[in-house]
Amino acid sequence: MGLTEQGPGGPRPGSGPVHKFPTGLAETSLKMEQQSSDRVVQWRVVSVGEINMGQFIWSAVLFLLALTVSETSSQRIIGGQEVQPYSIKYQASIQYNRQHYCGGTLIQSQWVLCAAHCWRPAQLIQVILSEHNLAVDEGFEQVINVSKIIVHFNYNYKTFNNDIMLIKLSEPARINANVQPAQVADGNTPALQGSTTCTVSGWGVTRLYNYYLSPVLRSVDVQIMPHCEIYYSGKITDNMICAGSRLGGKDSCQGDSGGPLVCNGNLEGIVSWGIGCANAYFPGVYTKVRNYGVWIDWVINSDNVN
Image (cartoon, rainbow, N blue to C red):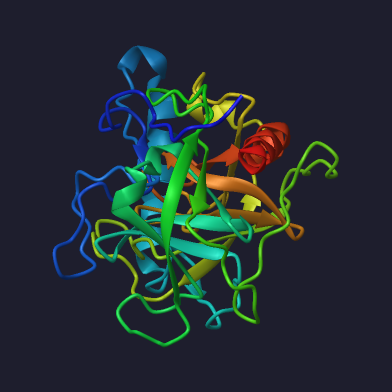
């Protein structure tokens, strides 16, 4: 069956969990509007009936500690650092009017993997590879138009289940010293163990309560956090994984949506959503890439037949 470009088939996510990409694009700066839902940042109000007073006090102490750690860390992805230029060779910037709004991962010379909540009409966006400083034309950038976008057929914009899409470039990327596809985890990849250290990268905001994107690419190491349903009570599906820091202070955030989470050299996650950013009680939630190997192969192979 032939594939045609697909949109997410529902209203843009604005309420509920908060994405980590800016939906409101800056006019001339890297400013991100507060209403954006880039790694979906969700705030949940907990009723008194859900917790007793002792739990409430302990939760409040941990929450304030997490905020303190986040706010005192140096100005980075959140808790990370600027990367060596062009060292993350698979990183893509998804842009509208040459303004970054989502990350992505090159997985083949003509295909980029991204989050479904980053969807925009193909004719309105471009993919930038070999990018480091968004504010400077460094001369190494590959600016490529998009020919089609395939959103997962079962994407749910309310729950963010199956938050994954494939972007086909209008022409193959030039594979060189700065641009290399990522190795994609699949069903044959050894299972991730709890506390595995992974790296997430992007141009997202660098500290809490700041709505300006980082001009340079940054990364931070985070740990896989098993039993994520404990933190998110019923919102985590088998198609999601969580990663962060048990003390908070390290996370992806707004502007990082769609970008890569790489563990043991394999692309394991796509920045998707979370409650706040860098919160010890609420790690970042990522689309579990290894669950989609069959779907990715089917989309690409079906397109090649046409």
